Amino acid sequence: MAPAFHQVRKILLVVFLLNIATATLKTLWGNATRSLSMQADGIHSFLDAASSLVALIGVWIASRPPDDTHPYGRGKYETFASFCISVFLFFGCFHIVRDSLFRLQDGIAPEVTPGSFGVMLATMALNWGISHWEKAQGAHHKSEVLIADGLHTQSDLLASGSVLVSLVAGRAGYPIVDPIVGLVIAVIIGKVGGQILMESSRTLTDASRIQPAAIAEIVMKIEGARACHKIRTRGNMGQVYVDLHLHVPPEMTMEAAHVVAHQSEAAIMRKFTEVAEVVVHLEPDIPGLEND
Image 1 (cartoon, rainbow, N blue to C red):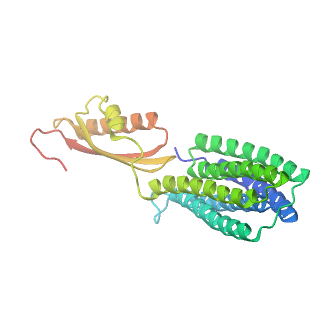
Image 2: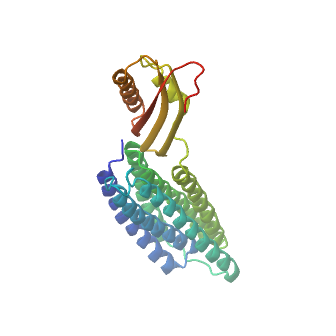
């Protein structure tokens, strides 16, 4: 079943607005207190918002129905949006590493205030809620882009925890911890970007989505199925396409063979709800005859 694109768009819109709010708060406070780690976290949150916007555009395009130019639909635009999210993350990595190295050289100490802790704790609580909700909805709707965006927001939560450590260290008189934590945040962001890139590349390169043995086991339970081979799957986690070759008795009529094919398709789609389409190539099961 294809993702519920309308619901996914609504979720992404809410997440986008919340990310803008948290990013603005952290960035303004980080600039006011000269906290590089808080500024880096603010940049990360703006990247969250940018990725949500890209995801919104990708899902809007992906929701368009199949036509003559895109007979399989435009589902890969959602995957491409996930890929773009990973690019945003890598860009953020570079920016934070550069600023952290500069700060290690200039030695400017951030100003740590009770308000700094309040801002970080409040935004962490909000990010936790966003990430948990977005990943749960992504799993429910089998949406790659929601899961990717949720992982992005989760990385923001981890980064914010690192910022708290730097604030405590700054309060204790160790300002050098601030740019070091900035580097730690860059590593966290880069790791999440790599995870999203690997998953999106599976769809874009047509990697197998379901084990052929699992499909063969289902098909071979259908009466009249003699053999099943050349099983292939592709697509994203919420929209998988399957094709296979099915052997039936050579004396079986065309009408009866098509019944077996339709039963096979229905059985596969009942077991794997993410399957959008199954194409069955019928072949006569003749011993010694090499079938295409």
